[in-house]
Amino acid sequence: MQAKSIKGKFAEEIISALAESMADGFRPTLAIVFLSVKQDREAISRSLDEKGIRVFGATTAGEFIDGEIEGGSIVMLLLDINPAYFRIEFIETSQKTALEDAIKLGITGRETFANPAFIIANSGVSSDGEPIVEGIIQGFGKSLSSENGEVTVFGGKAGDDLALESTFVFTNGKTSDCALVALIVDEDKIDVKGIATCGWNAIGTTKTVTKSEGNVVYTIDDKPALDMLVNFLGVEIKEDDNKEVVTFLSSWYYPLQVERENSDPVIRTAMFANREDRSLICSGRVPQGSKIKFAMPPDFDSIEKVVAECKSIKENVQPQADALIMFSCVSRHLSFGMVIKEEIEQVQKIWDVPMAGFFTYGEYGKSFCAGQAGKNDKYEYHNNACCLVTLKEKVK
Image (cartoon, rainbow, N blue to C red):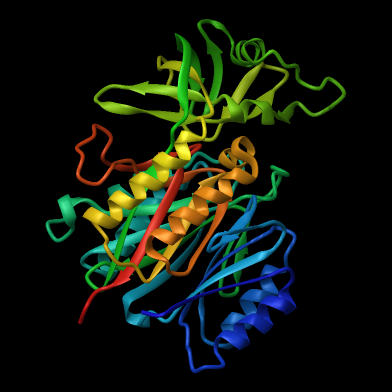
């Protein structure tokens, strides 16, 4: 499988770069497209469609290609995979139907390939990602043909340049601000390996979520959740904003670490705050009764940890790759600033192959280090994580 990466600041530039990339006879069948919500995704999709190229696309909170971070632009990973080895699914969904829709997707994958892998992206700013990965796993079911009887799921939630208003996923002729796009890959033909890693550190005393529903946390230790976080951060919500539900970017630096029995903790970011009922709207489910701590961003050693874990994947799981895809939480960019470029550069250099990625509002993947047995060795939904995916065509 051959891969090429291209980028552009506007649609005409990326269309020109696409033509140039194909001038030597390269004939891609699949385009992984990550772009700013301000870009003309319909025009780009049409251009790809005219060339018979299937599209897996998402809007971003910043995009990057190989070792370079972009902003407000378009990045594209072009692959010449045999069309029989993959399938694109696009499903309109909602928070209420997410589990049911994802189950259908899991069934589709199972019926299409004996050993499918799912690379997904979904739109919906405040949507909970847990039902999606849970639904895919349920729909797929246990399979003796797949490694450890489980299905591979990697991906990220679309962004909108931190406007937190409307995010989009798209494919050929379709785009929506509340949908799920999936690249289903035949793992008997294409190896899909990767890792999700976080690094946020818990601080302070353990607290209890005393009232919550889904991804909305109402009270912590019987006190309004918003007040608890505001007091912890030492900041105030802007009272000149007349909206009931407001963006609370300060909280992205100090998410909730949710403790779980027989599993590693999981991070949940409070993306919005409700000033009327003083609740927090998180990017993932926080069950009532959960034990939590506030968490703070990792120090710069976290970048070294991410790079080391990716090297472990290369050494123990995937020594070679044809292409890389990275889904990195926008909170990492907010916390590290331009230093995050070092993480992206160093990871890309491990395999030294084309890579495209974007800064997300949530990530899907498996938290483990190759060769080490961890408690949390299953595919699930994450916040504040960096998720790397490697693609390698198997020898015929």
